[in-house]
Length: 117
Image (tube, rainbow, N blue to C red; front, side, top):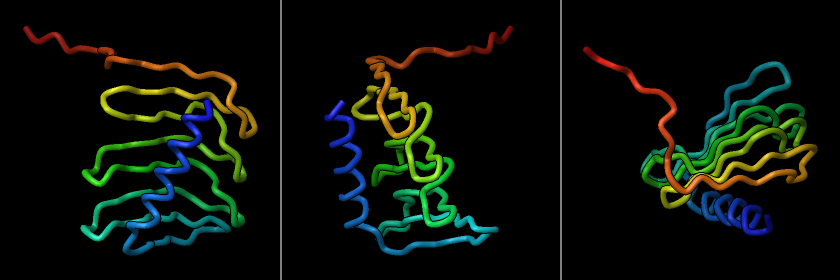
């Protein structure tokens, strides 16, 4: 579990070191924040409400692939978070900013298929 948190902290640190600009869209006590790198690709995006992370937040690799996706509730991680790394997916369940369950998926699973005649 510490590895997950360290990975997330390192990814945030490395992403912030590469940011070029921040774009915000203001709502009622809520801001949508998007961090871009030098090439104009999105590195992070999410929402801040009342000066705290709130709602969906995502981080991306330089090439645009999603690295992390999860939810914040008033600055605390909550619900299912997904971490993508080298073809593997790690699902982490948070309750009130605490890890309660970790599930590793080594290979992508087929969720649905379309049968064409």
